[in-house]
Length: 122
Length: 122
DNA sequence: TCCGTTAGTTACGTTGAGGTAATTGGTTAC
DNA sequence: GTAACCAATTACCTCAACGTAACTAACGGA
Image 1 (tube, rainbow over the protein chains, first blue to last red):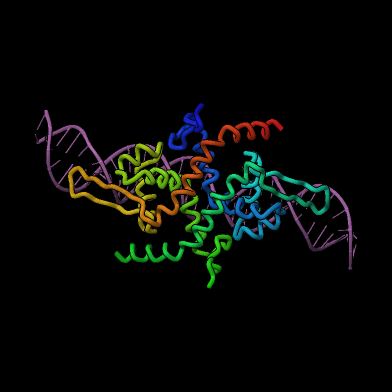
Image 2: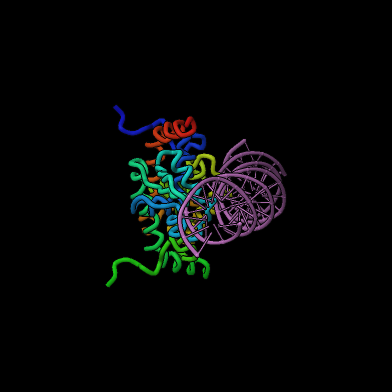
């Protein structure tokens, strides 16, 4: 019994997992999953928290995540509309590595900026 | 003494860490760092292993990583040219989360494909 | 009656990511 | 001499990502 999946390989250009990687290795996905890790969140709240995202892109991002089974969409029969998004169990397995990326960016940006200056001054 | 850096926040559109996140939350970066995690690698070998990447994009990716201090470039005074790339200590701190993303894509693509079919059939 | 509210869609335009192909440079092999 | 080798650059083109703005539906409130 093999424990890994040797049939799927992101390094192969044509492997379906490559496209999946492209979707999860993405700033909006990382940020969205990081925020949803705090619990079920309304569309409008997500839009506010994800600084600079447009409604169009947020909708597209959430649709893709929903389609892949990473997020569930809860629609309330209210007016004005109220829709909440929540990580699925599968989606939660992405929370740790994606949140780690966000943390990394924040924790190491100072060092990165120094490195960049040194490189550009070379 | 604060342990975190409250001054940097990827969720703020204008924070420099946002751009840094955009660079690391990227399929080519994830794949490149994953491969470099196995040790110092020649340009040509990287190009072969990163299926489908063009020389131009690989060069750009490596330059950006080098500039940010995640990768070091070793040039040998030989002909034909020989250049090797290696993760720095800082770059290695990204290996775990980025490799995790690649693994995730491979390990969950089957489930994702099923979810997608169900969604599209809805 | 008209406005505000929220999630979402559509049309449109701009920017950037990324691929292809041609070219460089200096050796070694033929 | 000329071809091959390898890393890298450049010009050129295409397509996807993304933002903006206008618009919709359906109800409550002034």
